[in-house]
Length: 199
Image (tube, rainbow, N blue to C red; front, side, top):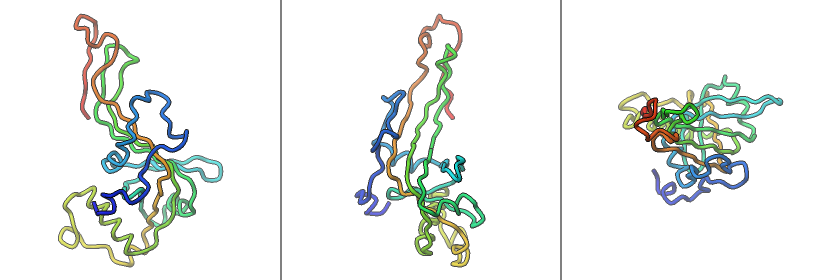
């Protein structure tokens, strides 16, 4: 993490309007952990509307200083569409455990999640592309660095690769922890079984 990121010299993602208000289990809201979850997540489901139809596409991603970065082939229809500054919504979920209860409605899961809203735009600067892609590789493969572990991308390959930044306008985080919470889960004499299954 660089000094700028450490000092939060950028708009820190947080809830701002009613669209990031948690309506069910508001007690599970953890807005102070938004950036923690964004850095820990592995897959970002990016959703947008094109010609009146909704789309959602999963991407590997990199989070940095209030932005989500996604990349791919110039043949990607989604990356081509997302270059125009349109609004997008992104969902990131980390599943930590499955929760079995003695009552059917009380089966659940322990999770960490972020929902964010922002606007997307194309990144064309080659130096920035290289830096973001190197950071993405290091995030998924900690300790791997070019040129020791892999051949660095050429300028030509970077030119032919699309990088899209999603500037986060607002976000909310939610999490569940703990064990079964059904009405009879702690009653040893009640029928059935209750347990936590780590994922």
